[in-house]
Length: 237
Image (cartoon, rainbow, N blue to C red; front, side, top):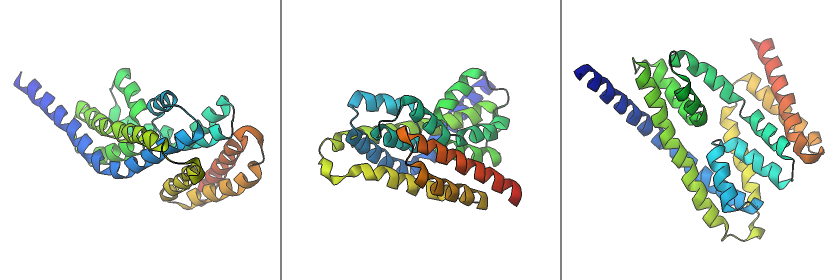
């Protein structure tokens, strides 16, 4: 009984350690959420639509892409495909975390898929690689602690941004904040020559692809950039 109580206490502490580790990162998430809420109002979505969007899509970059395509009145299929393209990195995140989650059931895995983002991945993988937690329940709890911090850190500022957005004149042109912020968030992710090739080729392809209707240009430029990056990685390896 004592050992079981000790394990429970350690798991609980792991959860709060994950929460605390993610807390400082919300300094960047909060203004991001505020701007997204304002841009969503400028796009013409109502509060219910924005709330549903925020709770379903816990991904800032793909949310900004979706807002851009909604403004262009792109079909829903194109919007979903573009968001999925932007979030392809989540598949790589999942693959990196799998060795540390061996033996976990489908329920925590499913919940982790919902909470997986740049912050929860970075924080958790670092802790796992440093060997901070010996047991699987502690590793899982640490991840969910980080997720419990990042979700309100994103959704609450969005609500505030929605409230602010209704008070800001349309002529301020805040819709330009979305692409500007997306570029600012993307820049730190360019770390290798292959990343630079993918970014450069995608940007070059986006210019002529912008003439394509219904937001198809975003997907086309993404595919071309990803292909170029993968080719460059093989050549430079």
